[in-house]
Image (cartoon, rainbow over the protein chains, first blue to last red):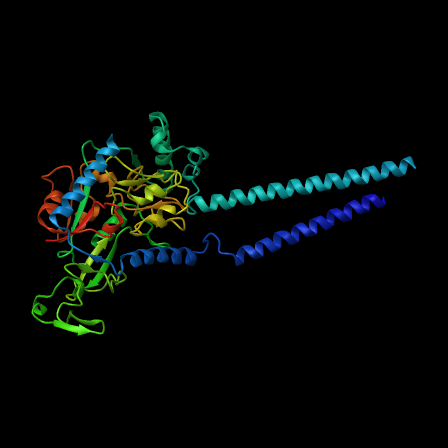
Length: 86
Length: 355
């Protein structure tokens, strides 16, 4: 009988520990950056992606290509295309 | 004594049984929670039609390019059934092959662009992009101060050589000395101007940017599962069902032209374009990457991209780079052409020019 009680007690102990663990994990999950769930978080992520694109374009200087630049570029593109096809 | 033993055994059995039952229940509840979580993340909330669900077959399908013709037909059939049920209209998912002997290129005249963003809206409409929460747009229009562009004629004879703290080396000051040499700087560019804003503003010019369809695309090299690849026409495409959403391609893209679906895209049935292509404008799901494909569903059928058709000033030109008589090749031959980040050696096939 005592053994059975012990077993029941130890089982309950384990259950309490498990519940505590799950609760703690749930709490920590909220603290850690995780998969975006709310609409606000989703929108913020999207805007951040677009801002990155804006940043990628900022402070860049474009220079017009010379005729030889253009020829080299076109040759390289067509050569690469041929390699893909081969 | 033996009764005691039997009693203990019974109690123990009871405890074991109850524990087993408890664990069973917990297991069932956990599985139900996981299933309902996945289901709510991937199935549209507004429909109760079971045909609108993503099926296990769709989850488990392989890379589209490696499928047999029969498997491709089955995959397309599943998608058509699902989209038709979800959007309540007959939806087709084409698998039109890439035309032979074509290498697509795009040219955009920045001296003509008025920044109206009709291209952006046409792209959203054609390519079934998410309309709200989140808003996904593949084209961004930069608004750049006109002063950033090359030399100013009126300042040509201003400025003079001067000495500096470094010594008397005749360093040019004044005039055009502080302007970019023969080019265009994107400094102070802005992409967030209101749709109600009157355009064009005479003090600015406008540069729409989208995927540059690099001939040597770093995004393709970065994809760990080859979900994104260059098609035979030089367009970089994505197998949305094979994409694992790791965002490595987004990180690799020097133009930041890729968009990630952070949430389930919001696309209403009325606004959905039912004429789709597997690698093109078919509705995407949460957790996958998407980007401009030069409107593959149109261009593979010999039509022009939607952004080009929407442009009211004819600033956009599209054509076959292998054909010397195509508009794009003529632009390359005769105009002042810019490429973005050409130092990255990605060989973009999207060119900007001044007409």
